[in-house]
Length: 224
Image: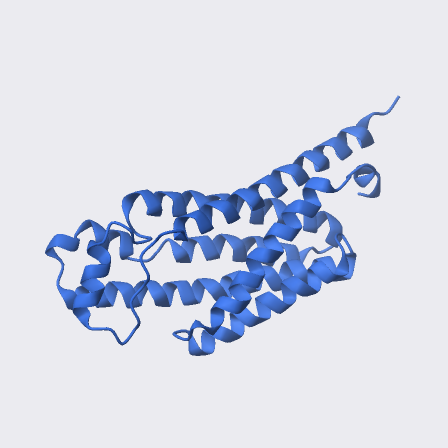
């Protein structure tokens, strides 16, 4: 008796569950970091306010919060890579969109982690206010670029989902809408309008995670 298809189905089922769990964990970790954190100063604030921000124990770059942020971003990489593998299977021959999604997801995490805010917090007691301002603006610029990579991830995933119906088609269009918004908001990167597509993206991640945890992958191996 040939049990290979059953083994394939079990492997895809396991990958689907890992993807769903990683997606839920990433959302929880990243948003827990923000709960109770100090509000960021505006770009037009005095330099002394940026220094006070980094000297506060409640900034996102503080040791405990930055640790949780790093774990959350790495968990998102797990989600992004695992989802890309699932979508590659659904995309079929020449899976270029799912490959772009994988690279974009990794690039998002890498760009977020390149900011200088952790170093600014570590040296806050001896930091010049203008250097504190520069560290803040540099990290915000890096995050703005990271959102473009995140938009690329969302659009690529959404395109595959909408065309392959791996998940409900509206899930694909939701990803495309949030991803397109994230890319376009880079034009005016200091404007908080990016928050709308950004929150929509994480709502999409939650939706995908729940759908994958509930999905039955029986028979997937046979269609490969």
